[in-house]
Every structure is written in C-alpha cells, then in structure tokens.
Length: 231
Image (tube, rainbow, N blue to C red; front, top):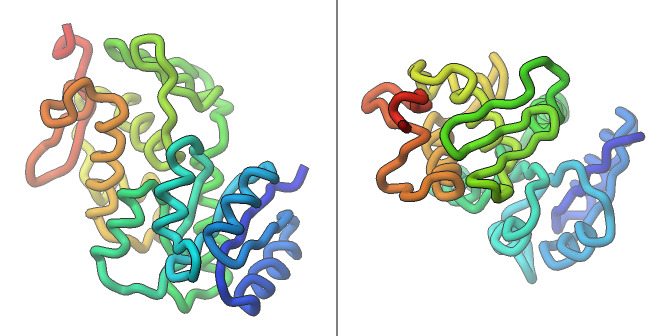
C-alpha cells in the first residue's frame, strides 16, 4: 500500500509540484493550504509523513506543531525559508524531525523523506527488545514503555534512543548521531541533536535536569547509562 504524505504549503504551485513529483514515485499525496486545513486532513487521513511549511496564514507551521504533537508521533519535515538557526531549532523543539531550507531540489527533498520514513519504520532485525532500568524499547513494534506506561516519541527521538541504548556506556559524538539520523550526506547543524535529546529527556527522565538514562559527555556528545549506574 502506498505511503501517504501530507503536503502543507500556502502556495498552490509548490503543493502541485511536490504532489506530482512524489506521485510519480508512488506516494499518495494529500495537500493543505495552511495549518488549520492540515489539522483537519491529518484527522481525516491516515498519514505516514508531513511536509510542513513554516510561514502560512491562519495557522503557521509552528502553531500546527504545537497542536499536532500533543497526541501524534507522525514524522514531520519542515519546509522553511527562514535561514536563522533559532527558527530551525524552534521547529525541532516543537517536535519536527528534520527541515529542508527553501529553495530546495526535489532530489534532496526525496532523500530526506526516505531517511525519515526509514527511521519511522519498525525494525525487522533480531534482538527487538532493549531494557534499561524502568525503560523498555521494542524495536520491532517501534514502541517505548517507561515504568509500564507508553511513551510517544517522534521517529528521530526513537532512533536516537535506540542508537544509544544499543551500546550502553559508549560515547556518541553529535556528528555521529546526526549521521545516524540523516545518513552520510547529512546537511544539518549539530545543535539539532541537542534539541532532540532535550525533548527525549522530557519524556523519559524522572528529572530531566538530572538525567539517569542519557548522560551528557561534555565537549563530545552523549551516552546511555549502563545497568550498574541505575542499580
């Protein structure tokens, strides 16, 4: 069954261009002209990924994120003409998985879509359960439980958590983690990782200011605690 992508942009020509291009690649594409229309479409359709413009009338991309991310973990890629790093960071803090800066090439956009969808796909490998303290990750089901309660993560947060928990105690640089998310040809700022980790800690740490599961290695990056540190 074709994967469904919701394209949200207030410019009809941009929506049409992306819809036709992705349609040729076998994706099913639904479109919306602003954040309010996108919320209605996301409730009506079964969406696999959202391409979200930032600057729109009625309800902009940031406003959409604030509402949608309360209950949904569908991957979101921002389409932004804003070049300021602060704007990109804000989008990530609100729950976006990635961003593409306008103007962009269609090949670049498709590469980002495929990378994010891979992160969102359930694992087909062995060793599907990872347990650390009260944290349980099921890679095949793409689910996380904390003290028996389900935790909703974005695909990027899930990918980072899994990468760290697979090698407890190993230190990962921000560059390496960014490469894990976007592939060898990544184009992003390493601060992206800091934002995703901060969001992840809010969801899994009893006290995000004193993290137990994900430790900061100052000047380098992050590592997962080992079992002895949690005992």
